[in-house]
Length: 279
Length: 325
Image (cartoon, rainbow over all chains, first blue to last red; front, side, top):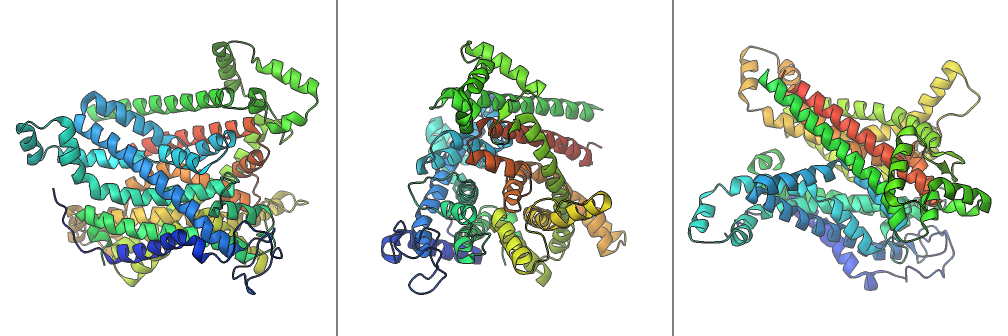
């Protein structure tokens, strides 16, 4: 079924613009970053200016270069984890809503279980035991952040399966799998996209918070790693704002942009919400 | 009567589900250190234990009973959990149970007022903003709270401490008290230390609640019961606070329960910034020292309180629902 393509709301455009800048910065890191973020050639704890426009950290690494290279890791974890979470959520939601009965009960029971587990602290517990790597964060966060999507998708599928075209497809002899993939899935795409965007924000916030606690992949620069060292190695208590503000401000700006985009899409996906948010 | 019975059944099934989650978490705590790579003794005692004299480690190993079969260990472990025999924390240099309970108290002292205050602020401001949808007040408040919601709580805390603590010197730079005070002076001292972290936590809590209440109030605007209330000749304020807002409170309760995980996580990070001796600070120290038992039981106690809060929210929600009451 072809999707209507309404013009995107102002929120989506503004949020999408900010996001595009960050993604572009991450992709162009090798050309944008003035220095190798690991090189400690400069004088440590230099304030901004004089070749280092965000100064240097405690071991003389250029903070601006760290910030640009770090965006790659932080964005990759956010988008990767969200992609995994939304895939799991969509599959569970569609299966539960379409099959109903015992399948629905088992899957939704599982969803409700995961929903009340304190995910942030479970992530801490697991990450102190295993060596944190980028893919570990993706799998761990993706494996925990899916229940919201599963619930929304299920409720949409419940109403979609009652519509005439599903019955028509069935009458034409289409199998369950074909109906789910070709007729039900397109119905839930807008909601899944909105949930994906929100999950990216949730995953990035959680990754940042874990990083702040010292649970980050030590082999790759990330905003969480920068934040941790800025706090743990005296950047904060000495008021070196150019060390602890940039990674925090960057993640806040990305999350803000993601929320704007999500609100725009949700408005389109659910006409009731559109009334609330469109201006 | 019929509805009341259905409600009680629903609450019982929730209670069963929460118990199951608690059981899963307890089992995770049991199996993770035993099955994950690394020396299970160190996984169970924490890395700092390796600096302890060998005879101490030997006696602790004997205590753990790792040579016994897993089911027997598991049974023994469950007994230990419920009798408060949680082992010894090398990082805190005291029993885990004691360390967790002391820190839990300070977290509750900080988080509970913040949750209530945040919900109250959000209910009032969200109601006013939703009622005057698209007014400059609504646009301003919605924008501000959306921005606050985007900022990681620990960053908000660092920023507040930097400006109001370091730069302006209005508030202390951390800890719960300055020492050498007693009685009322001690209480005033604690409140002074608490002001800034409480403010940050309240704002970060209120930011999401605000969006929920605002949208719920907006959704009531066209409803019949609002038109009826207006028709009765009630003032605008009376319609809003007696009819529109109560309808928006049920989602606030649900969201508060779901957000508890977030508020605990947010509180933990804010505590670290302000050196507030709560669970967050405890966990931060434990991560640095890889003090596994401390992290495990902190996780357990946080999960248990979250589940309890969820259950209380279920009861409050049922009580708020006019169809059941």
